[in-house]
Length: 382
Image (cartoon, rainbow, N blue to C red):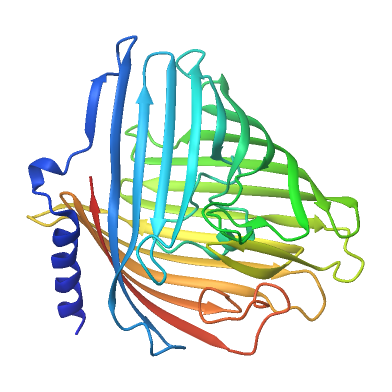
């Protein structure tokens, strides 16, 4: 059964793409080493097949998502636009601008970016090597894109610092629903603004041959949260510590931290409403989060390409008494063959809204127990 599904996914991606290998490379116009710079168009088309332990209605192959990137690069200026569309019930019934920013290179290491861009919190935009994502993504701490300005610089060799101010979140797109957005942001009566962030990381060389290396870092996040219902202003205070250790093709990343939100809600002081991908759900205002990820890349495997098995455990441990902790585990493998990527993931969620839970899973928890998802994807990269 799994072989037939993967084969069908591959055929579908050829059909969706309608390209041959020669046409699959990213399209670049210009030269990034010149003053005029270069403009590059790239992206992907993605299909999926899912088997859910809590549902019998999803055993079918569907188009999942498309991504378009437009990048500009010159010696001094750079810019990036990322736009995505997804299919829930019909083609592109949800779409969103993810990034849209311009930047200026002060020198070879320092730059300033302005616009809708990733929030510098954690080891990077993504904290893990899988495709589905960790549970912290649903709490608006990972893969967050807001509107603001960021200054990146290297005061010392191998030391990177980001200082950023985000005036507001990335907003909603294509729907009257406040949850019609890519990033998990506070919605309904809550509005997060005036986000100040600082992140520092240090690259460590642990061997003379560069086979063993590490990165250590930390970040802090402070913001205002307006409560339109009470006409009061609360805040978010969050911090994280992270480390990545790599030995040749083996990589291990550990991220942990604390999230503390005061929503100035006299009725529900322990719970806030978050929205993303057209869904609203409740989350616990205070908790400790952890994400552990390990992967190994087998490169140049005969005529196949690169095979990367990986595993992840992600959890949000809530401070409020009686609230059940949320967790997500993923065991998977990805195969990169020329312009195609094939992904197989086995996902286990507990008190996880995205894995068979309820809208209260990330807050007080639910009674659905442990749910499982088998996720197959085929991606055509161009």
